[in-house]
Length: 209
Picture 1 (cartoon, helix red, strand yellow):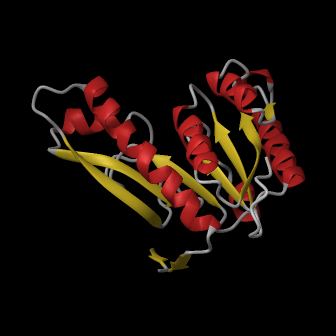
Picture 2: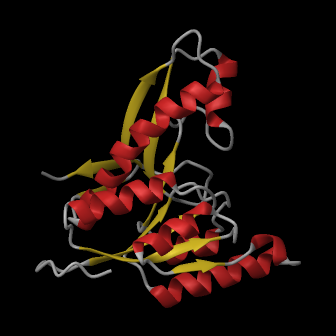
């Protein structure tokens, strides 16, 4: 939604599959700061996602493309690309989106897709990162916001923050602690992008002052 901010607005689109905790937190942060951001909507592969109810509450459009309904999964990815191209975002934020974005999608929006991941990449990429950390006996984990490229969780890192793993913790406790940090760094990464303060230099992301 337009905020009326005098600066040129960046158009941001969210992708989510589940409860939408990071989506909710990011929207609240954007609106609290009256940032120059136009939230285009939420796209989900799950018509039962709680994130849809959150979008309704925020009066943000939501678009459900039920992955399970596609006999040929290639058609899902084609429809996803078509829908996002129609919306024409400046930034795509994957937050709890449980599908791997295909190369055609990623290459259609170079340097315009970011993802929040619950580990200190490159450690513990992919699914069940918190369980991976617990099972490995890691002493420290955390979360990462990174640009998305064709590999799984391999894109240039924007922001990271660490969480010390208590000896008594299981996956649930670690997940909760990491989520609190995700809620801090994802809105910040969105803000930095929309203020044109991020530059990709090879594997590194430079944050401009």
